[in-house]
Length: 385
Image (cartoon, rainbow, N blue to C red; front, side, top):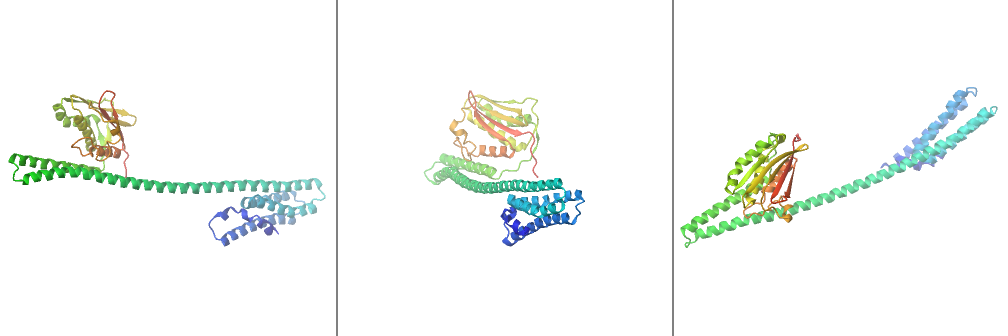
């Protein structure tokens, strides 16, 4: 009877949602029904086999009914708890009538305990059902989030592929343009050299054009290789003052020819920072040369450093005409340049090196005139195994 009654609650098995065969699930349900039935049977047998004079033991045996009731409520919901309570009451009431009819007060306590059976079975089952429902909702939400995440990742990958294809297309078009112009100049110079009407002076000029354009192509390919295959930084502690001194020594001559003064501003409190000295020198040198080239009139270029929290900030400030607002967001794009002889890869390499140092680069127009390029580099680099 117990097995048949509790079977009506088998649809509340919380594991029935798992991807198992029907036979396995049926065996699980049957095993749990047997556990409930055996638990009730054991508690009942102990009552009937124990002398009524051992009241303390009967009180203990009566509490044993709670184990199968709670077990049924957890696995079969409130209906399972209610059915198990009914079966327990059906098995226990005859014992009360037979053993405690001469003790009406004690018998009433036992009947009251049976009411508690129903309360515990029902409340536990309701809580189990609620927890099961919340778990199902959470699992459903988790599956939806996982699906949304997969869709987002797929969309992100598609966007990345589209961006890569777009970048390759722009790079190819820009590279073709940058190569075509020197080739056109070389072709024109070669035609002049081959022409019998060309004077010796024009031939010498044509050779100079060819040499100049070959150097331009070589510089373009060198910058392109630096951009495409950057060297891994070799970090070491570097004094910012010495780094800027090296830049000033390299650029001071060309700056003085244009009446430009390069000044260093490094407070003593600025600590050494970890970087690849050669790569960082390349970055600051590129920015300083750009500043010198941008200034058509005499003026001043300031190379300054400051500590900013756990980073060092290096600034290159010039007094040139500045960069138009509409071009500021483009200057780090490969092959973008406002110079007639520029390759458009210098600032792209700068941005790449700064990024590999875990830093950032910022460009802003000065309030009076000119531009300021600010590098923010961590004082300490994270070593990667």
